[in-house]
Amino acid sequence: MTEQKENIINASVKMLTISEDEAGQRIDNYLLAKLKGVPKSLIYRIVRKGEVRVNKGRIKPEYKLQSGDVVRLPPVKTAEKNPLPLSKNLNKVASLEHHILFEDDCLIVLNKPSGIAVHGGSGLNFGVIEALRALRPEARFLELVHRLDRDTSGILLIAKKRSALRNLHEQLRLKSVQKDYLALVRGQWQSHVKIVKAPLLKNELAGGERIVRVNEQGKPSETRFAIEERYPNATLVKASPVTGRTHQIRVHTQYAGHPIALDDKYGDKDFDEKMRILGLNRLFLHAFSIYFAHPKTDEMLRLHAPLDEKMKSVLKKLRESK
Image (cartoon, rainbow, N blue to C red; front, side):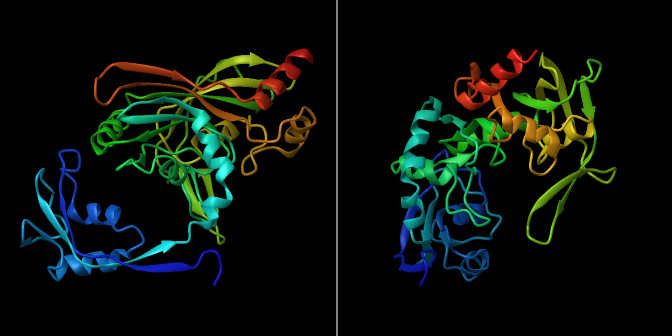
């Protein structure tokens, strides 16, 4: 057996009381979160057969849980991945503690480093959410509010309560969350290009790789741009996505004729080589600011994530080359 071998664990019958924070979600979604590693088909089967009960009665998968409901979970075999892969990355996991910008009983705001995925999967052993769960074993609930690409750094929100997750998702849906990114792009960004509206279509290649293209059949997408600083052969721009599509800023900058430095999917090799000479070794896209209402107090929060030393050094060298 390899490191990825699965240990089969027999669970016993559990009686769980639904808290106020857990109320309002469907029983099938609740079970998917509680019984991690259990196939979806098995979860629907045990609900259909009446092995899962709420207040001693049978329910349907779409039943919405109420505060105070008592849920009976039958013995289920769950497949747990061997924790060895995570233990191999203990230094990376521990270092995330120093990247927390804000934390209270509702949420964590993290300055995610470049090169770490937000969650495991697709051949990756762990991501930010698995690492935070390892750092906070006492936390009953930790879920990503939104995502960042693996190579993008910056502000990432993690909810510590289901009510906070619902509230923040609603703010995102209503587009009341202001997210600003810094991107170093090729050439001189034209001053009049302040908004890029271009529909984006997601394609999956044979190897599972995702490529996004501007396509009339795609989803409506909008990014607002402002020039922060000009250099001889590059521009630092502020990008504020109005919609939240996969790779949106990366594709919209490319579509405008100014791909981001060291973008391995949508970039320009000649420009990337010039940036490598200056010491850049990662995608220059950073979520540096967020403005939103605290999910519990409604107080407006504006948080900033500083650029890493590598990015600062590259910008300093570009200024000196003027």
